[in-house]
Length: 299
Image: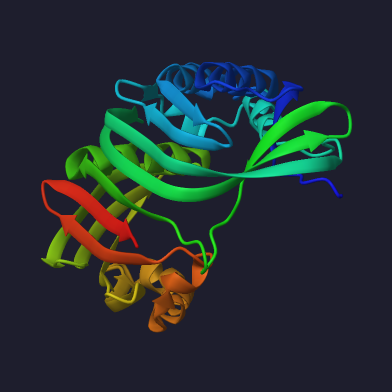
């Protein structure tokens, strides 16, 4: 058998026979791989809020509770070479030992909850659940073991749901802070950035954004508007997209970008085509008011 580069190594055989032991092995592997400096505390807290129950070859439940976990803005914007290298190492699971045996199983119920999880000062409420996800236990050539989640198939689909909510103003404030930092890196001062999302229907939102930038004694403003909708078939469409400026020089500079934006938003995007077989999304709802909310069902 060939190696499966995506399986999670769990140390020496035999494989864990209890949820507590499996959790301890997952934690040990995660710490060995490393999280990246800015992610360290948050990932440690998420691992601490994880519980696993085994039932033979199946994982009866795997529950992650990230309530109270804080991921700082620096984890999203850091350009520190040490953090970047650590994060790359944490994702590097290549050169795993060859697989010499495997045992199928099922993750019957996997959940992720946070009430809230704070990311860049934005309090995000999350409820997610997946059921009947196929897995396999790995026996490796060096005497170690591992576990690998497998993609669902048409014959063995997964079910579940996803609900995410965050205060719109907090999201806009975070976007403004990140945009200000990015503009400063380019020698620009972001004087103002106003963004407003408004619900037009159960699956449609409108966007209005205005920005003012300054460089030295020169300043200019720009605006963008548009609408986005998702239908029952999970097709994303854009409408009434515009990008411009009252400043004729800036408007000229935006002409190329405006053409690219119009080209990118002219055609519907079939999001369902991006999903693997066995994953069907229905009941999509978008809400943009005081809170931004997204919900969907896997069926």
